[in-house]
Length: 115
Length: 117
Image (tube, each protein chain N blue to C red):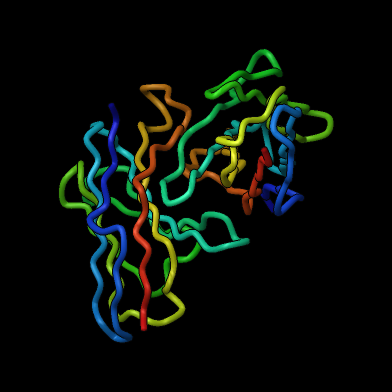
């Protein structure tokens, strides 16, 4: 079965430290991978995506993510966290092998950045 | 700036009522989606539509129906609201999977928090 796992419900990081939010996936074929962020009381916003090419993808607000095919992972990273990065982060994947319009979503990881 | 709007931010209804949630996008997107978001469960797809008058069931369509009479508008209908439909409802839109090459990046509305009493 196709799935996306975000193994941490919550990640706590001190401001200025590097952050990582983990995502692993299981799909048939080569995936399209996405990260979205949800700030309090707001809808989801697209952060970045991996389609093909360079395994390191850069996105909005200084975030980047690394696609690792052998580990089936797509972890979100930022070198220096800001308090304003505190939000709910979702990983999603679309299976490229079919004509499916759907995304498969992780359960979300709450990121808390402490001053 | 791209925009997806939803008719209400907060809604309180009673069990058994018929509930309409409206979503409008101004990006001329072919695809539109309705999700519900519950803590610890992520986003679950209720229905999606890839064209006017076209719809397909998502993962949890039971108790819901949809309507897409115009390209920009996608409505979610709770035929007879129940307490287990209390949730955050998110609408999204995207370009098609093929043709315009957007790779299914979705744009979301702000959400409607529905409480069924």
